[in-house]
Image (cartoon, rainbow, N blue to C red; front, side, top):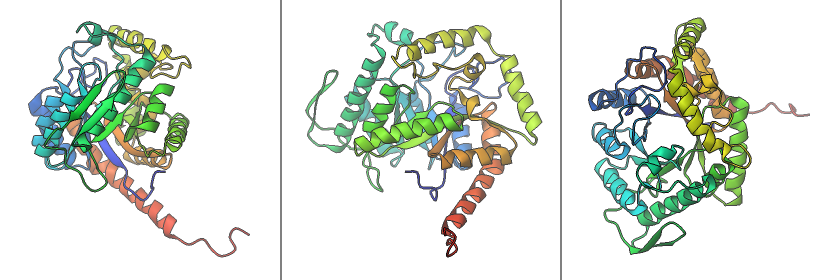
Length: 376
């Protein structure tokens, strides 16, 4: 269970892909290049962010004409910072797990134990077929991801790694140096997303963190309850992250106006192309619980349903929603912004202090003894 006394953690989406975090022609003072992202990473770690997630795209698609490769870009950000943990998104099927394990082990050692991975089972068929790789059926992609994660863990923790599966085989293999271990971290953290039953069961078996697309309160609570149930069946512990897009302004009306402008200026062709690509992935599942299966056009303008989390309004309103998500199981919020450098700094200076004060109130409430006879 989430420990309410533990501070809520924050991550941001690394804009290493052109076009920003919304598929809209609204002005976005965000750049996909290294210099901008290097400065952003320093701003983020100095404003309360513990993690950054580097996106993975291999080819132009849906308003994202340019993209830096995720693992190399993550290493560059790790070496430009002191405390920030950087999560590289990776695709089983396009990486051999032993090669990735070796890369991440080196990145982890070079950064003092700050490397992590986000295992993406895949939604963009053209990335696979365009590179001559097979496009597996939905649940088969998740079976492959589970083997991929198990191989990573085996190689990172065993000097004589062995694994025999349907997709991967490792025989008496040793990588050195191993990643750094300690403080409850036996290996680099492994994150995983997805909304389908296959994704939820995967998290309940092997992942350290389960990322949820943007959700309202009840939608997030439902996911947490189900994944925790699968984890309990497997005697496994998993933590929860939630995607959200932040629009913080002095008044709620100002923030709502920005949201309306984002949607009004949406790149309709790009959003519709994205919707067609991702909803086939969701609809490929028998129970129709895949990611984006029920997303509307406006939701998909922020391509991980970030508007649904409704972190839009004044700093006080956003802080209160963040705390409610924490109460419902979130240990980390993964955030996108319109103007990353300015907005990340604003969040650290104006929203995060309110969240920390609200957390103190939770702690004080938990520490206050209940009056004798109050339950009579």
